[in-house]
Image 1 (tube, one colour):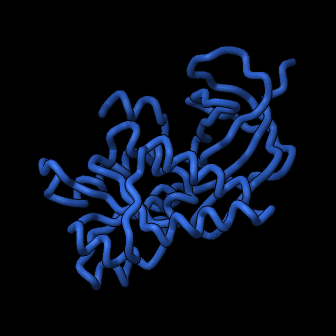
Image 2 (image 1 turned 90 degrees about the vertical axis):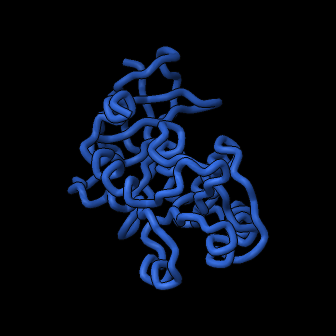
Amino acid sequence: MIISLIIFGSIGWILVILFLFRLSGKKNEVNHYNIIHLSALLDGRVEKLFKYGLIDGIPVISEKDMNLILSRKDDEREFRVAGDALKIVEKLSVRIEEGDFVSICKKLNASAIIAGADKDELEMNGIRCFDVTTLDRIPRGRVYLGQKIKVKNIEYRYNNARGFMEDGTVVEVEGSLPSNKLLTLDCWVESIVEGFNFRKIWARWKNG
């Protein structure tokens, strides 16, 4: 756990741990499920929460949400975000379950992982929730196209890399990266997707 906190290097992840301990008393069960809402998949941070053990159990998504992600791939404006969501489904070996989100949570007696979506309604239905936008309570500075930003804790993937800004914002890094290890790099912002409870950045590292 301590190692995970160091890797993220952001006070925001401390907030995550405090809230996760309240999620459920079912962590010791063999079949403990967490149902990932579409909003959390599009947010992207849920991958790291599972990867570093800040959320445990078996990740599940509804078939309806999976179909929505696939349909968004045909929308040029949302192609990149939908593609990232599909990568998360693959990396986490997410189980796809028939039915709507609420019914699946009830059937599996599972916690809901959301990103600012319908928390009050879910809790009224007796469903435990963790909202990843808790991370957004940390003040975020303005980011603009062409801006030079510092990206930390970079991890390499198939054809690009992913890191984080100080405030926890996910940054997809492209370019001919220097080495296959954790890095901190100065990058230039090329694209931004941002909403009230969500921000994701695509940036490029330029050698020299």
